[in-house]
Amino acid sequence: MHADGSTVATRIAALGYDYGAQAKESAYCNLCGANGHSAEVAGRDRYGYPATCVMCRRCGLAYLSPRLSATGYAHFYAGVYRPLVSAYHGRRIDAESVQLEQRGYADRLAAFLLPLLPSLPRTILDVGGSTGVVAGVLAARLDALATVLDPAPDELAVAAAAGMETFAGLAEDFDPGERRWDLVLLCQTIDHLLDVRATLTALRRMTAGGGRAFVDILDVDLVLRREGSIERAVKVDHPFYLTRPTAAAFFALSGYVIVAERLSDDGHRGFVLAPAACAQPDWPALEAGAGELLRRVVAR
Image (cartoon, rainbow, N blue to C red; front, side):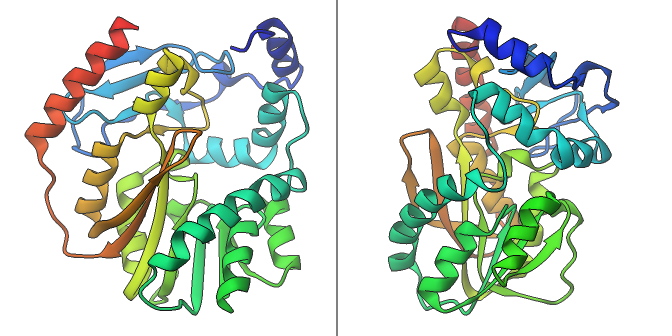
């Protein structure tokens, strides 16, 4: 934890959320499908909760196992997530405050993304879009219609009040039928998913022909190099922990190709994606990379 770890721990304990007592489910590698070929890399998360993070030896994907169920996460996001993050950072983080933080992110994303789009999108879907700040900034600059999907009702209410179409729920449960969007966003959300592969496949179906998607990850490899400990990256709200190679593998399997990327100062790696044919990643290279990453984790 931070230098004032005892104070942080006291604030978190005051929330009364007993993560250890919550119902859990086992998980397996969401990328290569391996089960029983993982190595434990952390036994506690940054909040101090007893969360076990493992890494697949075959492809390098890291994930929580066991983890909360979909119902458990729905409850977590409905009333625990923002108070927990607020307690950790020692400042109020809620539907109002995140708008200020997300506006800066949205401005930087627009400056990076808009020049790379082959045509002006008329429709935008922001998955995990919170209060709709990012979708709203892009929609205003493009004169486009914005749709926001998020599991937090209070944050969606802000987006709805701003005139955006909203859907409440997790990305894994969202079924838009035959609808397609010109620009699909998954901003600082992929780590929160319960099924990365299925969600990206669904997003690929929702991306209009000639459209684009933007996805960014918190690169756990970069966090390890910067912080010196993988436990600083582990948190119960992140079921998955990606690197550039594992992200690229997910994109290929889902039917996306990377056309541009950026790296933020905070360790987020963003990708502009175009629809393509599904392809198999280089599994031997992923396995070799997993071995090297595991050796560095153990060495720390």
